[in-house]
Length: 201
Image (cartoon, rainbow, N blue to C red; front, side, top):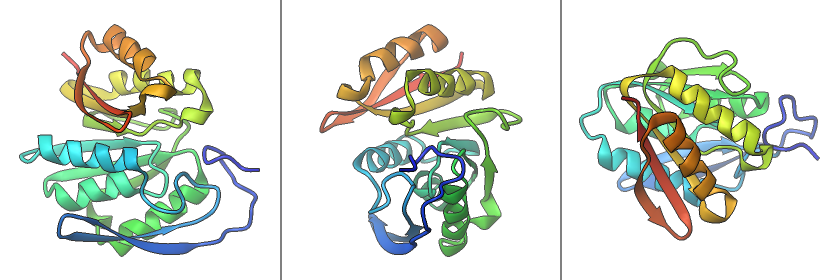
């Protein structure tokens, strides 16, 4: 069976569409098999989106959504933060195809760029913010490469937001972020999920 972090899923594509609300804002997403959280936006991603929106009302700059899947995090931020330009990256080509469809569906194509990349392999330039709901099943080595790449690709003063469950490695993630950034704050936590925020000094 294909995992959601497979580059070229071989299972037959089975697309369906769902709607989702953030406050009064309605989004429409196409999703399918062999992508992460295919039945709807997962709780961790929702908490991450809510936290970033709450803390960045006056944000102006470039955001990277690393491991974007079919795009709910990056597209939501592009839609609701008017001065954000969002790059979305994933290894899963099917997820990226859906992300492009979803960006068009939610009218964010003018401020969204989509890149096929295994972790930070094809990422160029630097960002004011990086957000990630990392692929837990890919293993700690892959997840930690996300954090290391984020540090390398953040501008000075830029920040990284990570969502992770306590039972899936929140303590080791916090330890790793502190070792990289020298800081890691809990921006929010709910139902066993932690939103960690680190600044690049």
